[in-house]
Length: 114
Length: 110
Image (cartoon, rainbow over all chains, first blue to last red; front, top):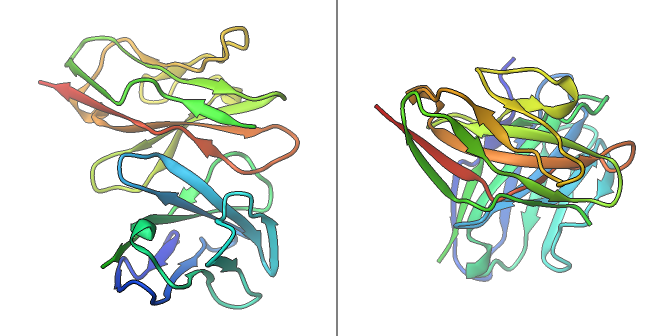
């Protein structure tokens, strides 16, 4: 089992461009979570998704950010018109259908906005 | 609202010394508490959960509802315990999201 796969590992964007971060959950996992880690901060919950369904997006900024987990393919976190404050590490985690509190994390995608 | 506080950012001890990593939480319902660990160049992973009441790698943590705490303890630290430690909380029977504290860096010196 390859584990949670995130790509790209590093992404550089200029202000105003779009950033797309992808996450493939562990095999057999149906839930995906996105977290953001700003410098000197902990992991901030952003969104929790099941296939084709957003369960909890209470941590997502109201504008420019969106997430999806289609029936086929990876989950995608999309940031439109990036600003310097979006520079952070974005972590994806997955869990099986029955939630036990154990999340399996990817290695993260580091976004740098110039 | 769910909140997790780890009051200390850094802790440095010598090998063989006891360690206690503090975690306090705020939650109106019945919480489930966890400790996650990230070793150097590795992914964040679950260390232990309060509901299991088990010792993992010599670490234990007791949920104290009166003090709303879930401190992580180990009587004799080892160099391989050096890592980032995160306390996390989820709401039982409802929200399935995990809320994390800011983390604490433990360094165990030889």
